[in-house]
Length: 404
Image (cartoon, rainbow, N blue to C red):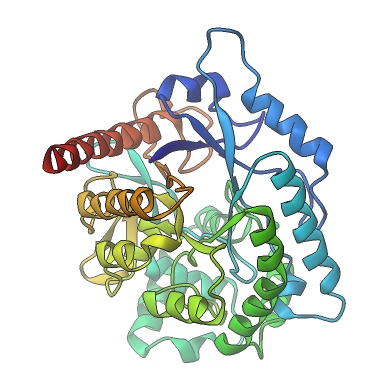
């Protein structure tokens, strides 16, 4: 497997020099300064690539190999008149990346909001801090801060009463912080930050959009993108919806193994693949991650190796756990990924390694008190990478011994 690390550019508190010390060899990055829907210029890609790859002699090289993400414009998701220009721009960005040798692209098709959390500094018993999604807080936001039209129809009487109790216990500053956490943008999000009124307006655009409609729009988008991706040798790796369920009246369509089966049955192109985000998929108890890694192995081009711990009393609530101490068997997931890589080497003329990265590490030790991107502090992700690396080395040694 290829160990990678996400870098948000020159303003990232974790520098390229810091990343080099982790032992990672590959960089996952994007041009966050380019507005959604515009073409990523070749010159801008090369400039960003140079920041990553140019280094002094004798220094361990890094390579920008994975894009996370080229954002998909809302007009594409809604199939609005004139959205074709944004599809053409997306393809042009992909072509420019391929010209620079960057051929693995993670993307998502989440409407309005990207990955969502209610708490960015949830204190763990260890004293470290994690990201958390609290369903009761989220319901309090939806029902009593956002006051979304017809939201009450999506909650039981008990859930509404609990949400009201949570809302009334919040101070004004706590309500503002919760709102900001949900709609104002998180690092790596490919959607804009919103004010509350703009957010309501964006949600209203999806009032009559069903899951079937959104899925049809995704398939239409990919039917135009995939032929060019195949010609370029580009691998597209769709990221699951996070959290993987409908929310705020918005349909979510990449949440389960069944969703992926629909995707690949409709569009069997070898360039059509997935980002196996273990933590996102495992925040649903009905997703069996080792089984999904085995079932979709040939489609896995990229993987986020993190896990979550769900609240036993409310399975929709979870926090980001340590990479090896979550509700899923990370060791078995890694074993399945290694088996897939071994299959590729035996059966494919040009086998591609699976890019993996640690994800959403805890804010801990010297990073507590520092300015960090929530979920993307240095020490927590280094701990996660070290844990995952140890599992990979141990399992790889077992495989070699079994074959000898």
